Length: 119
Image 1 (cartoon, rainbow, N blue to C red):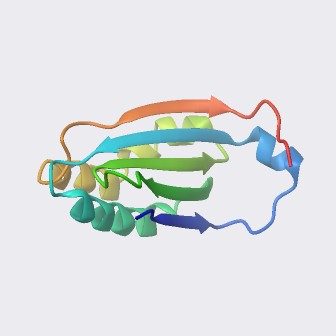
Image 2 (image 1 turned 30 degrees about the horizontal axis):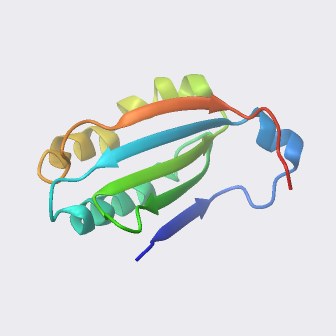
């Protein structure tokens, strides 16, 4: 089973605008038998995150062989906002607090700049 959830607040963007956005990859590992709960809680979180300034889109990916492996592909219009204000939002702090019930540990987060877009 493979689950994809995508959110896009900006509609169709040009390649020029897309290439200036910051890409954030967030890898989560859920506790055994808690993959579905983690997906559900992440979906609730994303509903709040997509109301934030500089949010462009998030795609939630789930490993087709192991639903405890979860990857968020996020696109943000402002890297400094992501690293400061976003990380200090109440909804993210609340998620971090409850995530101890279903995640195996903190996520692995990496930020990327778009070098080229091939279509």
